[in-house]
Image (cartoon, rainbow, N blue to C red):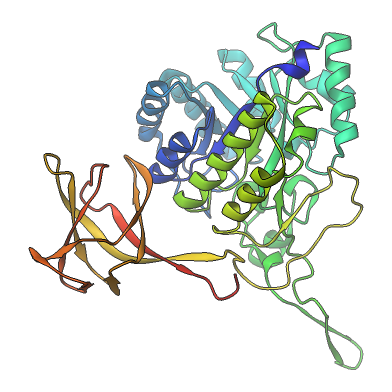
Length: 417
């Protein structure tokens, strides 16, 4: 039916202007971001300010990309005035929708006519709850613990019952497709509140779950080191090898998680899922393409991959090491200082490490996103050279413009890859 065959929207994270440019560059249909403290990544992402919203919307509009603002924390009474002011400023800036779960936010958005996406924090897990929220929202982000069968049932029921949101259109369902998973139900965790009096549900997660633990017998002090120390640290969700099954459930949006992650992660994840969605639409999805996408996704930050609960799993898969399992890592080398457009050459000041002929490099910019290049035929301080070291002025051919303070990295293989 048309509902299932409609084009699926690809939603990418933007935790910085570099990540915003990378998401657009990678082929996102929409981006989501937070400003200041009323969002679930208030602590871990370099959040934008209210004053940045107009700039973000303008950049998105140029590329026909929608901009969604996250206002998805729980609110206390002293937050209400700030929330109301933020929503009005979002509407003035032209934000396409907000992502929220607190009923005070939903009511205020309805009052001022601002489109709403129900956040996964609302833990929507059945069709009756979808119908309840249809009075407030045109899009609902489902709980992360559902199977594909459950998602498909809700999609078909929306069509059968003709459940429509405030816009008069059928409710759209959104699911997470890639990125970090919380050990708690749809991210509703209280560990940080218990240990640091900083609620994850108010954007202050300190990621206690990502640490190793030892179990201690309280009676005699005997300690047991658990075989897998990281018993609460889930692997990252990756659905690119069964993305066609997700699309066939009838969902309308797939979301990449990662507002706290770097621009190169955003670019590669967005690019791979863009290519996969296009391949599904063109009937070219499968085989070597999937293997290639998964290999590319493994080069950027990840904690290992698993398929979540979509295929009927009853228990999560846990990572067995701290930090990233990426097969590559980037090392900061230099900052941009100048660009010569007539000859397409970028100039950089080497601030750390060195660059040698043949090195793989990566330029990250808030204007051009992520650019990969190889260190070939470069000059140092105006002279041909085979190595650039700290303090030197590197000039190298580049088709994209280099702005001041753009960052240049060296890309190397990671030992754990």
